[in-house]
Amino acid sequence: MTKETVLVTGGAGFIGKHTVNMLNRSNFDVIVADKKPLQSDIVCKYYQTDVTTEDLENIFKENQIDYIIHLAALPSVADSIKMPLVDCRDNYQATVNVCTLAKKYGVKKIIFSSTAAVYANPQYLPVDEKHPTSYLSPYAITKNAAENFIKYCGIDYIIFRYANVYGIGQDCYGEAGVVAKFFDLMTQNKPVQIHGNGKQYRDFVYVEDVAKANVLAIKIDVEGEIINVSTNTRTSINDLFEILKDELGYKLEPIHTETREGDIEKSILNNEKLISLFHFMPSIDIRTGIREMVRDYNMRNKVCVL
Ligand SMILES: NC(=O)c1ccc[n+]([C@@H]2O[C@H](COP(=O)([O-])OP(=O)(O)OC[C@H]3O[C@@H](n4cnc5c(N)ncnc54)[C@H](O)[C@@H]3O)[C@@H](O)[C@H]2O)c1
Image: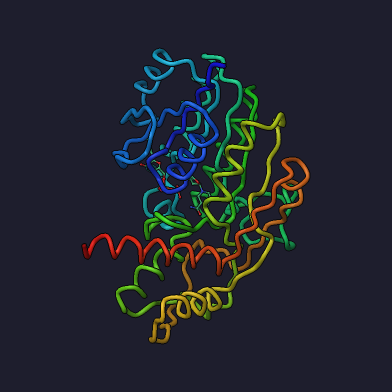
């Protein structure tokens, strides 16, 4: 049987790499379009390209694309406030370009990575998909606009609204950079800053669970839905600090600083829709996910020493 081909935009990024690996395990042919170089151990056809430009069309001319997982973005609330034009280009213009070409070349379905940021400060918890959208940052505005363009352009779609994604391979500057940032500082025995009193809480979902949802969205015959990808569990920033401290044997106490503009205070996403439509529940809890990160860190460190 011929393999189906999936184009992963932003496939050189954190969630992208895990998604590409999972697609390979599920026997798809994978093409990555990313402006950043791809790690050499990732198996796929790779185009170094900016998905906001006309160059993207070459990929569609040269390949028969069945599905797109659109992850390319500027995935940072803080950067979107500092650089709203870059945010507009990489989050909105990129989506318009990808969708327009998807429609032109008869792509079967697009899977889009939206965010809990579109709920702003929720009116009720856990937030379900019927909750009104709002914004505290340009990032939330452009993700919301991108969602609307996908619905408008008349292609089959699944829009995922991810909670805070964390796991192996995340850099310290992403949207959910808090886990990666704390991890990085603690492993260097440097002081850790917590914005505000640390009682703000989040729903942390492990990257492998997100990658699984992305692949299931291709395999399962469901479309035209907006679906939260989350654990429906709350973890405060103070709890996160304690778990990391415990797992890494870190000894310092945190330094509390001022709260940050654009930060959501409380967020947990209801995942009943994901469970009922996909028969899948993200099941890796925060401590287990962090243990995986520690195991990977120790393994890599040993390799470095040798
Ligand atoms: N990490 C999270 O917690 C989280 C939460 C909610 C939603 N998301 C969304 O998931 C997606 C992936 O996030 P991530 O954490 O893997 O981020 P990431 O920064 O690791 O990956 C994004 C990738 O997109 C690429 N990219 C950006 N603009 C591009 C462009 N114009 N052309 C080509 N490539 C471009 C980057 O080079 C990068 O490799 C993003 O759309 C993000 O908004 C992430």
